[in-house]
Image (tube, rainbow, N blue to C red; front, side, top):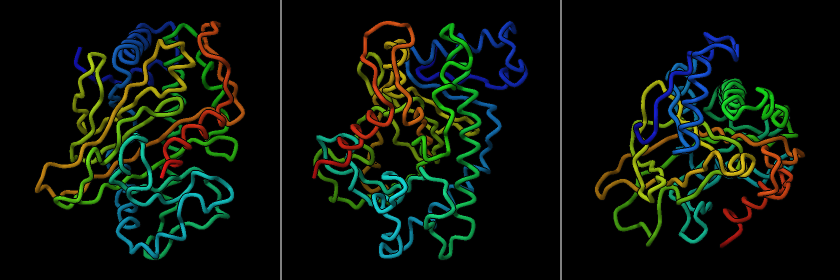
Length: 312
């Protein structure tokens, strides 16, 4: 099998969720193989098309290109409703805490509340475009979690029970728009990347990339291998809490984004939907073992944030 397999998700829609359908059983097998051997999979025919992705990237880039003083009022940490919502300036976040700050900006959509301040100057539709895409990703997420449960021989609603509140203040699932600005020659510190080596924190992650390269995934053999943008697909990966939840059956792979080659002044964008269980969900090993102790979802997430943002 290719390093990261491409799987046709149209089978799920055609099966109508009928677990006796042979095509659905084959889809479950493909999911299990991908998530146990690699931790990543490309899904095609998800019904999220490239035009939707481009619309979110376009409005996000307009925000990132604003002067810093216009972005500062939306800084992450300034929202009392959610600590993770808002703008993250370049080099503030260290996804590998041992390395210099990442060469990227981000805007986290964690709260969907209309009552909070959203960017608006010259950004008509910013909130609505982001929220609509958040909900499209949510719908796909729920379908993926069903197949994942079936692939493990569990009830199809097993994981969904702990993801009931996605999009509310009881769940910290986040749509993150990322912008990687041009990298100036000679300005990169030793060990500095566009996105440091890390594994994700929650359940699963949905990734939509622009065409520029840079994303690499660590294979089970210990080699970083390119994960390019494949048009009309969604790249989905297992995150750490899901690996813990499945007693290490599903693997959460380390990944990173490299700086461009010297002399390459291109920018890069991606949209990342970080799926987390409900804040108060208690995650225990789904096989009934005690390989990992129970942990409250939000407590686990905040501990990981402390690693990424706590060190100066």
